[in-house]
Length: 379
Image 1 (cartoon, one colour):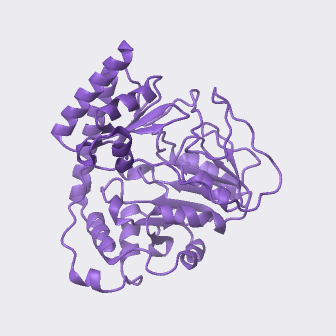
Image 2 (cartoon, rainbow, N blue to C red):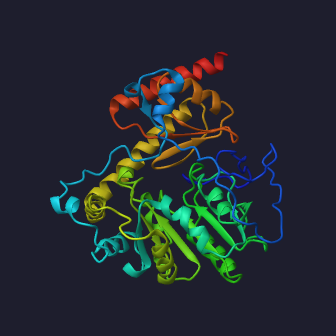
């Protein structure tokens, strides 16, 4: 099995924090969702839990914030070296008539700038897009990025678990959401499979939404070039690969008609001038991109080796590793007591681990991991 692929027979247990409203048995078998008319929009739910919450970790474990090693996010620790921001980027309002969308279209391989809408991080689009689609049944994998299920439920859709090992989507589905590669399981689906699903959904008047937040490390697998097809939406984010999560910029790739509707919903000036400056510089630096892809591949192999040395089975992307080893919850706790913060998925009893950023951090992680496993195995 190639790196980043997943065994479709094994499947995933549900994560209560990451798939609100999806019921599963403890063995991972899906309980079919209710059929019938789509419900009315629901009341707001509690915010989803994400990585990077170091202040919470510091308070919970009594360790000062500065002493933590944060491996919980899957964000590139070697962020793009943004050039100095010109004064006018701070002084002037962002100009949607500039070449920002065109730069993104070139980098992602979209048909043209008309098929790209810059947004304030893909999170803004995730919250707004469901209300622009006809209410229907939406298939979402039980263990995936945690914001999708509640966003579609708030907009009145009927969210049901999606078995991503299937070739033919269930007849009841009108829309589907796929994170590719998946966060956190690292599962990767081929472009051919996704386009097959898109054709099935489009025949029903539906939409396939593909979140490619972690796809920069494997650009050949992207569906960006196919976004002239009606009913296909692709979300992209420079935050993960470029290590620019703080700029809060993202892109929606899709039909101009859909993007016009989303633009009306989100309003003007969605991406700041300094953010546009940083992202445009990163998109133009092809030498940095080539170097970073090679570096991340090597560091991912190193992370996988360290975890395998402790008998932890993993699946990985170049930016993180994921394990559903039976010791995963105990591992998260043992590492936290040593000031190493990972992302725990409670109900699926799994852990995601990002890349250390320096040699000192690698040494610390290796030592902490070994100590944690010895402590767990001795208990």
